[in-house]
Each structure stands twice: as C-alpha cells, then as structure tokens.
Length: 182
Image (tube, rainbow, N blue to C red; front, top):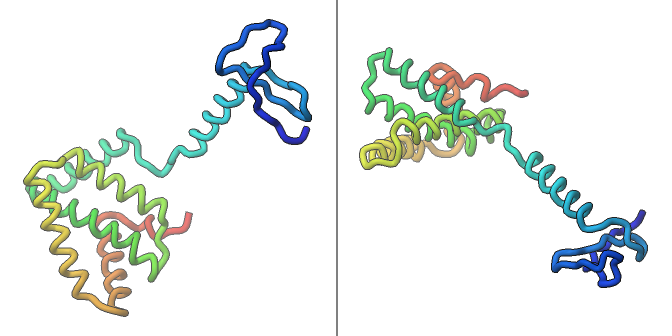
C-alpha cells in the first residue's frame, strides 16, 4: 500500500459537511479512509501503547497493603516498637537501593524483582509512617547511619560489603529471589 498521508478533508466531499477536524487518509493520492476510521485507528494505537507501557513490575496498592500488614505483624510479634520497625524498614529501603545500584557490579541482581521489593518497602513506608516529622527524622537518621557505614568502606572492600548485605538481606528480609535469574 505504500505511505499513508493525512490530509485535511476537501470541500468536495459528497456529504458537503466538514468540520475543523475532518481529515482523509490518502494512499497514492487517493482517499482510502474517512475520518471515523482514522479516529478509530488513533484510539486503537493509543490503547495499544498504554498496554505496552504498563509496568507489571510495580506492586498494586493491594500488594503493598498486604506486604505492609505482614511486615508490621511479623516485626510486632518479635516485640519491636513502631520506632524500631520504622528504623528497620528505613534501613532495608536504603540497603535495597545500594544492592540495586552498586552491588550489581559484584554479583547478579534480578533488577525486576529488586525494584518490585524496593517499591513494596517504599509503599509500606508511605502507608505506615508517611511524611510526618518523626517519620522523616527516622528515615534521615537511618540513611545517615547506613551512609556513614558505607562510606567507610573503600575500593575492593565494597564487594565484600555487598556480599555481607546480600547475606544479611537473604537472612533478614527473604531477599533470596532478588539474586536468582528468572
């Protein structure tokens, strides 16, 4: 069929009715489709694009809610206070970032699973602790402590640090699947 050209509809249409958004699709100079077909095709393309861009690696609000409930229940059963739970969650978010950004240089990290886990933890933080002053100070303090620890590790020792975080994450957070190939 060759190239298609979108051209403003001409006044010589048989119906004689035109509006500002009337176009013809031309192939080899001859009109092949009318506006309603173009509109249908445009809608179909837009729908296909939105489906193609949908992220199946982002947790749904229901998945975040379930993760948050389980997380709070499990740590609450261990006798941790809300502040201790917040500290552990903030630290796990920080470690998750480092595992994704740095540790993938030293060993395989399943990026899709790591991102999903990170988003679950971020969503849990937002749902359980939100943006309040106390929550923000807990998050900042956890990040400061972890950064201080991380910044004291230099050169090749970063790989060993990553291995320690990996082992700790597997034991403490169940991160085993984050290091497995799909």
